[in-house]
Image (cartoon, rainbow, N blue to C red):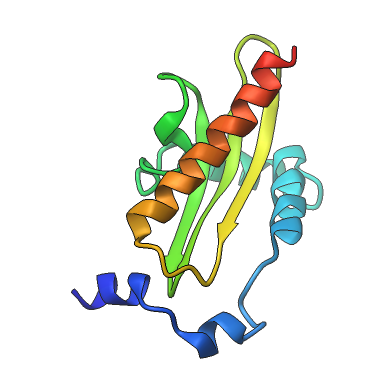
Length: 133
């Protein structure tokens, strides 16, 4: 119960504290460096990405509305009105991989609704790249 309350309840001091918070642009830069092993040893990348592929905390987030079998490697975060999902979505065929960062902050929506938004945004990104080929 305490964990769920913390996920749902807005905590203004936490939201407004700039420490221990990433920006979407900063997280995207980190993901790109991880993917290309730029400043990150390839051995670390080769460990982290499979771990991200195996996570199950985000089944209602990025992967939720993508076609069955789409390869997603992600990391979620939820606390105090936030719901985040960041990672990699592999496109079909030889179309490549897209780094995706979706942050929702200071939202009074229930976690399930925040997760629906993340799923919709991820599907929109996926469709953009697949349908524009």
